[in-house]
Amino acid sequence: MTKNDKKMRHFWTVPSVSRKESFMNKLVDWKNRLKKGHMLSVICALLIIVAILGVILYKKQREYRQASENSYNMAFYELVDYVQNVETYLAKSLISTTPEHGAETLTNLWREANLAQSYLSMLPIESQELANTEKFLNQVSDYSYSLSRKNIYNESLSDEDLKNLKDLYGYSVELENTLNQLSEDLNTGRLEWGELTKKGNIAFAQQVDNISKESFSNLEENFHEYSGLIYDGAFSEHITSNEAKGLTGEDISEEQAKEKAENLIGKENIKEISNLGYSENATIPVYDFSITNNNDESINVSISKKGGHIVYMNSNRDVNAEMISQEKANEKGKEYLTQKGFPNMKETYYLKQEGIVTINYAYTQNNVIVYSDLIKVKVALDNGEVLGIETTGYLNNHQERDTKNVKITKEQAKRNLNKELTIESEGMAIIPTEWKTEILCYEFKGRVEEKEFLVYINAENGREEDILVITNTPNGTLTM
Image 1 (cartoon, one colour):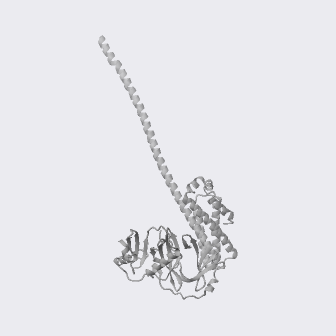
Image 2 (cartoon, helix red, strand yellow):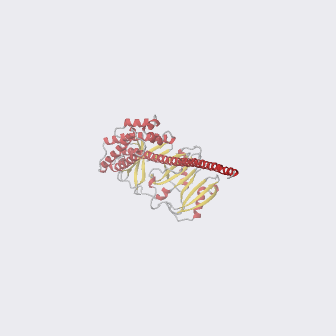
């Protein structure tokens, strides 16, 4: 081998080893980088998955919390309603004088107290005060059941029974006031179910300190064993019948109904009227219309197919001031009814909301109030304009009645009243029953201490037929 050949061999051999090592180093470096990149990708993917799961869990938790809040709110407001019913039936039981009606009242009381207990048990609060509330409701339930059995066997309640009922009534009023305060605290956010659920009694004590807890504590000391045409008024749940007795006349066409709707509002006041079709399956089959008046206010009108009677009219204009009295509104409504073919109507109960009063009128025949024949009228208190009318009760039930089937005198009827009832007014009325019948009664309005009542005594046999509790509020006079 020549010298030049050795040089060439050295030239090719040495660098070749260096390139291989260099390549291997690069390969290792590339693998390391790949591993690092893979690890970073895995970590990023895991972080993204964790973040997504976190968002999902947060949403689920929020949905669950909202569902729980809704459930607690539902249970609480049902509790409030049933406690109000307990208070009402306790009040009625205090002045009931016949075993028959007493048994019915006490049975209703037993049912309402049981339902109140059920909803109370759904609330996320455990405290001595609520334990006493549950004890009270349980006592009312058991005691009313035992007294109802006594009445069923035609035994009158003793003085001690009535005293116990009076004590329970006093507690029920206090409990109702407490729950109303709790309701206000919930509505204003001063009390939250979430905090009660997380922290239990401590949160309860902190959040209702000097508000609801004080009321509950007072209860604990006293417990011994313990938008529109809304309000229907007394007997309104019985305003429908199988045969619409007041629906007289021949069937009319849609065009004829449209003309009656226009005449009701006044053609000169109408900007546009639209036919909304025929409601065949309504309680009273009607033609429906939508009217826009000259002030661009929307008015809905329903005219009966049979006879073309006004069944419903409602305008939702805003009323921003109260310029007329309740007495004036009563007169405006009565004048309107007379003009529309409904004479001899007498105002009974009313509800006032946002400058509008909804008044219940009942038909009168020979000075006898017929509570089955009800009409609701909505009157604006700024100018006395009639904004709505609903005549379903009247059209379903109106007919001439026999008001002469009186077999006992008013004085005889008074003997069946509770001796503690101070009579403020008296008259006669026809009231409907749950069996779709009617009873001619003496109607006595009176007061026992601070509570007002209407008591109905059967004019034929002297039996106590019904008792209503009158509730006077700043917004109206209602009955229960």
